[in-house]
Image (cartoon, rainbow, N blue to C red):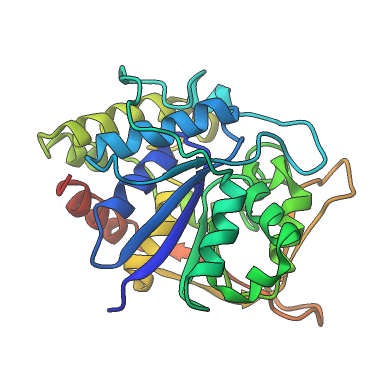
Length: 313
């Protein structure tokens, strides 16, 4: 299997943190060129800090972390402290990071990396609002054709919304950016709520993290204990959706996921449905397909992969 070069664009977030750990534990499949932080779950000053905390937890202070955009393209930032806590990584006590934040802006890093690497060799992995990616595409449209694939967590169809009745959080925060990305013409694979709500942190899965007997295992279990309280109360489920690691798991084990190549449009105008991913799942329009929209996941296989890889750290 060819090692994929990836850029992780993220707003950690406990589930973002687990996704970063999974990527750093999987060098046979993915090479992390860098991590760009974006405002989303919490403001930018916290997301870039959290990204560095996670890299140090993984024993990888060599990973370059960049701060990107601190606000959506044209809207006021909406955050999710009600889910992730005031730091974004609430739960266990975390030490302040000592590794440096890179001086280069995250958007400029994305642009320069895509210009430097060979065409069709870099996969973008957005785990939060799509502001950084859209800004890079608008600032340097020549890089778009160099993207191998965009694999993102965001949107919903059957599961509809988790921040409004119609919209998933990442898309809702910056729908204009999402519209830019979904209209870019490059291959896009989407991990929507329809998939992530099937990857639940049930008690046996969380115990699997604890049974590792490592600091990483304890941290992941403690993060899960914190953020799942909100989702279990909200949905009445046996655990919380572990959203963002689905992106990295797909790069490692695409066979765990199934979906359809369909048209996905982003609603940017309506106050009622702002941020909705209008997914033509049943192919009832003549709009051209622009994304592979996943609909199912082998949850046991997903957590087996996650546990096996995190145990390496």
